Length: 79
Image (tube, rainbow, N blue to C red; front, side, top):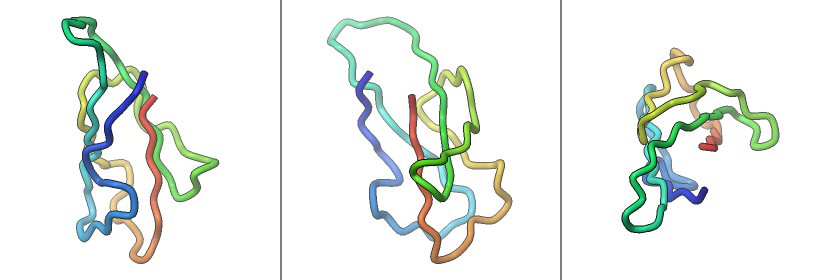
């Protein structure tokens, strides 16, 4: 599967505590398959925490962390 990251983009600075991760699955025209996703999130691109499994939408609100730390780089991945 190939994804288009909508937001937040790479290197984007966010100024709020509950970002919404948004992506688009790039599929062939006419593909009506229902897809589910796993979402990973964290402060290390090599040790991401699985925060959602079998998720069936293309947007996810980060709610498992009460406050994102300032001046911290976060990484996320949809698989």
